[in-house]
Image (cartoon, rainbow, N blue to C red; front, top):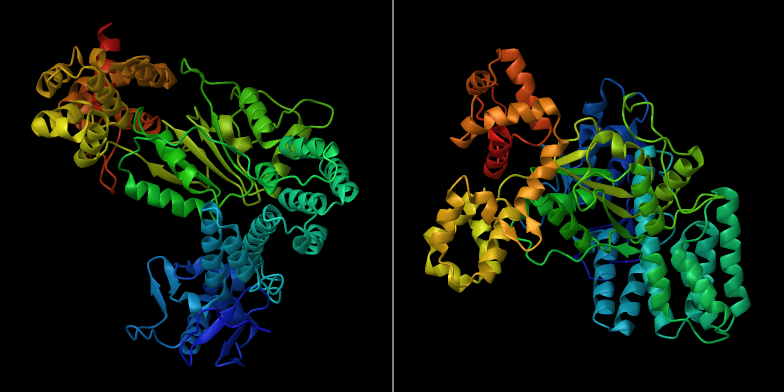
Length: 623
């Protein structure tokens, strides 16, 4: 039976349900949805409502192995049937399914689709919980769960594409069930959740957060022996099936329960065990990057994107963007958000073993017979001369198993090269990884890439105003603009300059702009306490090969004059066209040179080097 939408829809509106078998009703009467292939297309469009669905995704859902030559024409027929079923949009009379550059987009409202209503109720419930209104939170989360009729799209899961969408929907339902159960436990009403949690644990025995909630509900109900048995059973299952141990937080909860008798353990402890978060504080002065942040949030919210590379020159704000997104995505990653700095304070790269051990400590990945040490093998795709230490196959398997079983977000910050991280990336499962790097990491595929450059003038001035105060900036806006441009409009340099001015309250903006405008003094002026732009440039310089350092030193002169062309590169490098192209493209790959965003021939392109990197390269060339 399909439950009607919580918000009444106009008469004649079709109401679709995916949280169970695919069904549709109009005015209380079920509607025929046509043959199986037509239902597969409809299910795929409904699973991604109000979002373009690529034709290739629809094709894979209907014909996963060998699509016929007429596949696109057949898809058009199935889409036409969906249009007829949906009718036109009552607001503007347009088709509800339209085709654009990104694929087919189905427009549908919350009152017409159970998954949209589910998501709305879940968000409202979580918001109420964050406000401390637990009773409202429990009621709204329960309303959302009442829409869940069973395994989503259970009648179409023989299609791999639809099965992936169904698993994503089911994971969302499980997360909301966990939210609801934890809220009921916190309200002291654990008994209402016990039986449902037991049933779900039987269906999803490796889902740790469910186990934690079940432990808590039993414990609060005075059934301590059963609560402890839940942990023991889970520990044995993990050891037997995966060679893992429960997370440190869950183990700590178990130890605490051992001595608590019938005293209820607060539900917050269960949340702590399930929601591991190891992120630095959100950057307080984060400014600009609105389009890039929107793109990153959308990518990490998509089930199809597991790896995103955020690249850009030293000081362009890669880490700040990644952390800002991670802090905003708490609901999307119920199994935790983790940040690992890949470099030491002096800018040198940690060893892969050090990074892997830190990930293991944060995520609770344990290898039988040894300390916490998630590790990955050097895969066959890594070059033979790559300096990545081999690690045990057991550790590699343990890390990949953890990734496949958890929906977590992992930020690996300041990655030196592809070989360093290849084995860390998820091969399957719902976890996502954000890599920040100065270089492009071109050897990684498939990944999505977001390239950062300088801030726009307005964004750079906004950042400066946050640090020195808008009133001081208004005293001499022309000098403020000279300051941010002398910093190359890079967030790091603008931030350091702003911090310096915040201390030197007596210093006129015009005088500081003059200092920064002097190429021989600019890097000396960009120091605030223990933060030095020159030291950050030095770290990036060391990442370049000896050939790239020599080339960049020679290109720094023409680059300072507003960029350089290929002809200018040939003259500065003293080489022919082919060698110049290879050198410039090597510097682009390393993140030291930027090129036009659109397609243009090598001779017509204007290449640029960030101003401060030019100054540092000239220092090294002259030294």
